[in-house]
Amino acid sequence: MRKWLAPACILLMAPGAQGQTPPPDGGTPQWTTAPIETIEATNRPGPAVWRIAKGDAEVWILPTVGALPRNFSWNKDYVAELLDGARAVITPPGVGVGIGDAAWLLINYGNRLSLPRGQALEATMEPGLRAHFVALRTLLGREEDRYRTDSPFRAALRLSGDFRDKLQLTGNDGINRLARDKKVPFKPAAERASGYDLVRDVLTLPTEKQRVCLSQVVDDLTYQSTHAAAAARAWAVGDIRAVKANLNDRPDIMECVTAQVGSLATFRAHAAAAEAASIEAALDQKGKTIMLLDMREFLRKGGVLEQLEARHLTIEGPAE
Image (cartoon, rainbow, N blue to C red; front, side, top):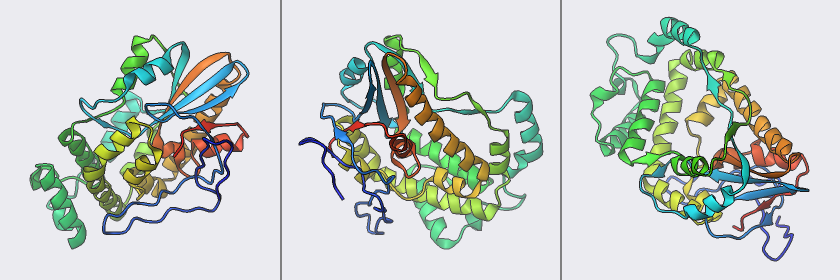
């Protein structure tokens, strides 16, 4: 159901609307979002932003689509103008592991990063996964030996890094540099959480479950190999429809591990709640605040946008 607030208004998916797995022929994926009815539209050139205002306070939410191609050209002036006069840039909360805990984890669980002696990664895969894995690593210019002794989870992480290197993808460096140039301080949505339980639980994930996640990573990266550039171009001009069409809605490694590791699911839920709470707190202070988020985390069911709506905040967003 669509409900327009003004001539230039836009909705996110209505309650009950559910995304479907994209067809195997590579057709346009149907995006699964939180059941949000409507948001008011803001049409401006540049990346899509959402705005929440309360009295003399306002928060501008700038979701990103992950890593962008190096030397990618986009309208940085738009974001620079947005940063003018901002009191802070809120970033997602992180996790940390102390040196002592890290050493303990490596001593007790570091062997889980490698397969048992005598096993080779590709030889342990079922034929379909092996074919897709080999095709992807070949596309990246990598030989079997690079991953031979890796556990499936370590191979997934290494493959993701190799993918970013091959496509020359960078993080939010451009936005971060703009904020530093404007001398806008960064402020995490919450204090860094202890990652001890999370890392332990991930390292002890049974191999067969790790293999499921590796399969999903291979599918996700294969999809990104033909859609990442289009997603970046769509993000740069605020074309949300095209962004959704080019962001794979199939489970990535985060979704896969979250489904199997309770501590990660708990952290993810707490992170979304902390981000929404930090936005609400910023509205109690005069001035402008910027929030940086990942687009998937922002729009997903149970994510930040849904939590903001649950707080009955009026949200202005981009036309689709």
